Amino acid sequence: MAVYKPLVIEKNETDIKKIMRQLYRFSEDLKFTISNLSLDDNFSKESLDTITERGETVRKIKFDTDGFSIQYENYKTGVLTRLNQTEEAISFLVDSGSVVKEMLTRMELYGEYIRLTSGQILINAQNMTLDAAGNAVFSGAINGGSININNRFIVYPNGDCYVDDSLKTETLNPAQGVTAADMEVYNDNDYINTIGRTATCSEAYITETLSCNRVRYTSDRRKKREIRPLPDVSMLIQNLRPVRYCINGRDTIGYIAQDVQRCIVSDSDTYESDCIPAVGQSGEYMELPYAMYTAVYARAIQEHQKRLDRMKRELKEMGEDVKF
Image (cartoon, rainbow, N blue to C red; front, side, top):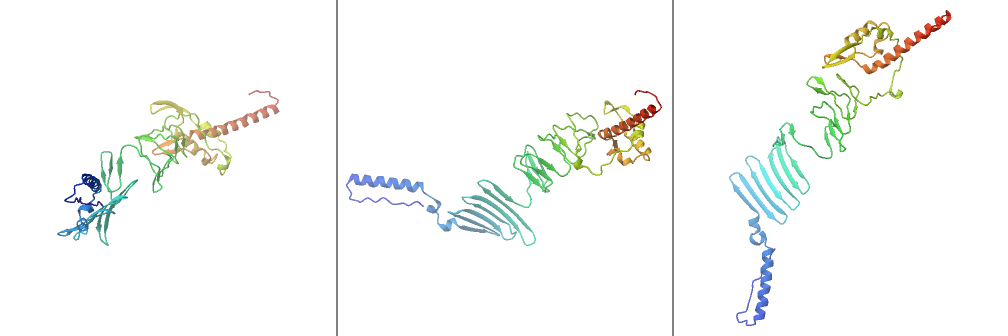
């Protein structure tokens, strides 16, 4: 608080040097007083702490060294609005409620963060909208440490993302590849699987062309159960009908899934049908696990080689010298 000391000069003072010293000291005191003026110097505490009442609304204003506060309260509606400002923070409160129903909105601004408490937050901006149900639409990027929504959508600090449901996006190109239990990428009604680096999944449906450096399958004995040999598949191989066909505008070769299914069903008495790679179903279309058929081909070649060896032995016993 500033202190004012009046200048006092004796009426009959004739010492000019003494008068000059008093004027200089008064000038310095006046500078100090003006530079340290505060509301306390001009208003009384009663003026600073005021209560004004109009109708059913009461306004309370308080100002002191601790901070500034202004409050409006309507006794009829029960709405309380208060704004507090201190050296540490600025807080804004809107409170309206009763024992049955309560609506509370509180905003606190601190030096390093903002705390907002409310029933619902609505945002309608050019780059972001947020409705009362919590649906948000925004443009731009989200930059931060991590995101966790009910442990079903998680973004880790290192950039990895976990989604425990379906994911719809126009572009998906993560730096460390994609790991999924079941991944299907559509463009309208067609599969479009384009992965930049690595795809690790239990099943992948490729309807057109698979282009990659290498495909690896987990084949460690420690991860396999109920290991048993394939039965004789010679009849199945004999009944398969390799064809050439056009799909999605491209010429290729392979089998017809319906033909393979008929072969498996018709030869079910020869071997257990569940031992042979089955025909799959994706939506309304049938599909074949072509990679699994390498084991079927290997088994057929082994059976064919056994027949050749047996024929060699029989011919040798007959004294015939035949080369295959």
